[in-house]
Amino acid sequence: MEKIYMIPVNDAYSSATECPFCALHDKAENDYLEYYLGPSLMEPDTRKITNKTGFCPEHMGKLNKAVTNRLGLGLVMHTHLKDFHEDVSKDMINSAPAKAGLLKGRSSDYRSKLKDIADRIDKRVAMCPICEKLEDTMRHYSEVTVWMFCHDHDGFRAKFCENKYHCLPHTAMLLREAAKLSQNEASDFVSALAKGSDQAFEELINDVEYFTLKFDYRNSDKPWGNSKNAIQRSMRFLSSDRRDFDEQLGKKQS
Ligand SMILES: [Zn+2]
Ligand SMILES: [Zn+2]
Image 1 (cartoon, helix red, strand yellow):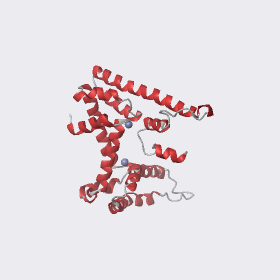
Image 2: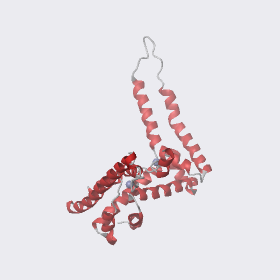
Image 3: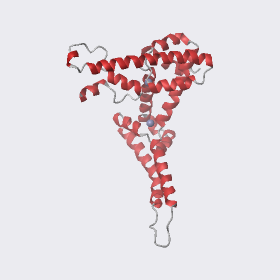
Image 4: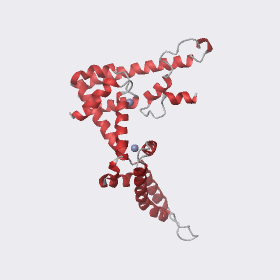
């Protein structure tokens, strides 16, 4: 098993307050964002890739927010736009069907041409080296997590069981990894994972209910307890995307 992935997994399970996989994802994502805004932008091999792929909408947004290297971002944008332009613009112009005359030129051929070019555009818009690297890294992390659980490496099993929060997308990811295990190994791992998930559901359901009951004037003097950020915690549990589920944002809007 690869040690370079074990250390961050161990750290995340020792220190994360919510889903350790969300913490791993955020850390890896930040590292890749920094990488692509750093000196790598000037490396011909990286540029060859980013000229072709650009970045997906989500990661363009994140690169835009990280204001560290505007020039680098500008250079990548410039060459990526040129590459995209060369790839699609001429074909798009040529895909406009000729006007059908009364007797000649009627053809449904243009329909498949238009769909082809639309598919090509969609595919290119979605391409992203950060997404690709992240997917690969998260796959290694889930392999290592399941391995460390099964071998109880460094007392990892207890750490895993103490950790009740795995958000649902990362629960699904770990279930997929568990499907590769032998029946006995899968039995222990899935029991622990499912127990945590069951507890998290129960706790969030109770906390969100308490949150709503606080709006009843008869309960206005009762303490908030754990319910104050119950909505944001539920959102983070339901989705590993944490950008907009921040407690501070919730406050501003209320
Ligand atoms: Zn997660
Ligand atoms: Zn991406």
